[in-house]
Each structure stands twice: as C-alpha cells, then as structure tokens.
View 1 (cartoon, rainbow, N blue to C red):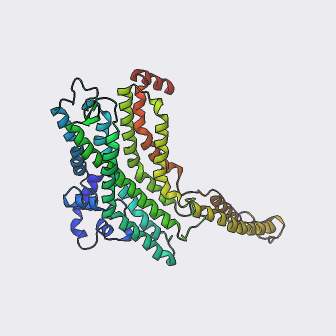
View 2: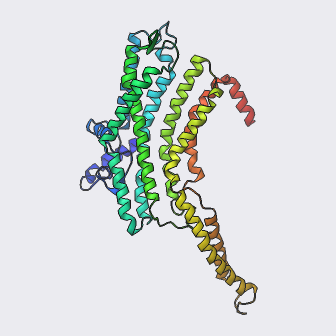
View 3: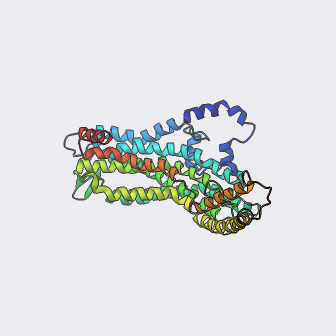
Length: 418
C-alpha cells in the first residue's frame, strides 16, 4: 500500500507546490491534518537524510538502514570473534532467536506501524469538526488542546529525555545487571567479576539495544500524546446525540483508531515471543510456564490501545442517562396519545388504522429509545477489537509447536475439522 501511495504522492507533487500539502500543514500546525506520529526531531532527521518523506514514505529504505545498523554489525563481529556458530559457546549468535526477531521483525514493524497510525489517526481531528461535535464556544479550548499536542509531538526536549533514559537506565543499569540468557553467550562471558561484554556485546549494548529502546519509548510518548489529547477533548461539552445509530452518541468513528495500534501491539508480542522461544530452546522451559507473562502482555497492550478512548466513558454515561430521561418523557407522551386515539376510541370514524403514520411514529420512537438503551459505555465496537487481539496473539501461535511434534499437531487439527 505504501508503494502505491508513494507513486501517487510523486505524481501530484507539482500540484501540491501551489498550496499546503497535508503533511506540511500538519508539521506547521494545521488542525485538519494532525497526526501524533508525524513530527519530532527524529522525523525531521529522517527527512533531511532522505530516509523519509513528509508523508512517512520511503519506508523500505528506512527499515533497511536502521535494521542493518542494529543487526549487521552484530553478525560481522560475532563471526570475527568466532561466536556466530562457534563451538564452546552455549548460545551462538545464530541461535539467539530473540535478537534476530527483535531487530529483523519487531524493529521494522515499529516503522510500518508509524505509517499505518498516521493514515488511521490523521482524519480523526478533522472528523470532530466535520461532524459538528465541537460547539462554537468550545473551539478555543479545542484549539488549545490541539496546539499543546503539536508542541509535545515536536518537542526536542522530549526525545532528548528519551535518549537519557535509554542510556541512563537501559544501558548503565539494566544491561549492567541483566543477562538475558544464563551462561556464556555470543555477546558476553561470565567471569568472577560478572558478565564481560564481547566486541559484539558492546555494539549490542551501546548501539543496537538503545536504538530499539529509543523507538519503543518514543512510541509510548506518542501514545501518551494521543491519550492526553483525547482526554482534553472528552472534557469539552461535545454535541453528542443519544439516538445516533452508531450507539456511541456520534463518536463511533473513534473505534477505527484502534487498528492504528495493532502493528505496535504486534511488535511487542513478537519481542516477547522471541524471548520465550529462547527460554524454551536454551533453558528447557515449556510454553505453559509463561502463562502469566502472556496474560499480562495481553492486558497491557489492550489498555495501551483502548485507554485513549475510555476517557469518553463519563460523557457517554451521562448522555445515556439524560437521553433515557428526555426520550422517556417524549415516548410516554407519544404512546399516551396513540393509546387515547386508537385504543380508547378517540380516532375519527372515517380515519383508517391501516396505513396511518401514527403506527410508524410509534415504531420509530421505540427504535430510538432502544438505541439509547443499548448505547456503549465507550466508543468502541466489539468488531474493532478483532485486529488488535489477532495482532497480540498471533506471534504466540508458533510457540505451540514446541509443545508437541508438528505431525501430531496437524493430526489434532484435522481431527477437530473432520
């Protein structure tokens, strides 16, 4: 999809020079094109080094360069040190599944997730205004919230703080006291004084891991920006309608934003799957031993994607209560008049019941009242959760092969189907 988008963008670039293009407008603060992932120092660096366009294209180039900076030196240094497939190393480089999965699968997914999130989230701000959800007297507050989101997203200080956290905590604390696999590995060797890093280990600890951790923390910061913006909007007196057919007062379009975080969730799940595979293969563990870790990951990733929309729960709950009261009074009046006219003999003798609009009006009122009764507490449709749940659980499925031989698994599946 991104290749076709890049072709279209290139074909229309001459036309866009006469006015603000969407990404440029977003970078300069155009409220109609806000995207929480399109901006910041790293984004501008990628644009200047021709690793990205202002529309997050050149995705393949970005993935190849960053992934190879993180992974290729590890391979070369491991080969030089004889630890790629070397005898005497309990866990050679080629058998450290977590490393290959982290840098060759999860890291590219983080960049693809940027492009997807940009496409999914960019129309949301425009939708609030196009649907008339922002009252005139609340537009100033809406603009203030949006301006704050722009400022936070483009903050140089924020990304410098992330770098400080990566090296101050991730390297000097975590790496110093934590070795993912017990015993000698391709990147470290146990000694009486602790784990000593090899040349590959030094690159791994001071370049590769910091790159991955920086991108992860940068993503968390973007989710925070999005959640804060949603929370600020939820504090506004939105023009919600209790009888809206989306059963969310008119906020049903927000459910589509959940899919923007599916690939981010997939990247997290892939990393965990790689770590579990290492423990299963190199430590003799079994998949059920990690039920708690898997369950915790599912809960955390669901909260990560759903929390930004859960902030509307209070306003939707109040809208439902008010709607039931107001439409209850209206329904009582309509039903009473219908009863008086058609049941108690109040209808004119020459007015036929068959084809009377009164019946349709009563049915319509019943439908409207039912919509209010079935309003969702959060603007999330159940079907919108399917891509997210699949993304979280999919990387865990191959690990089930470690619990039984492949031929036995195939026979069990065939037996279930037939």
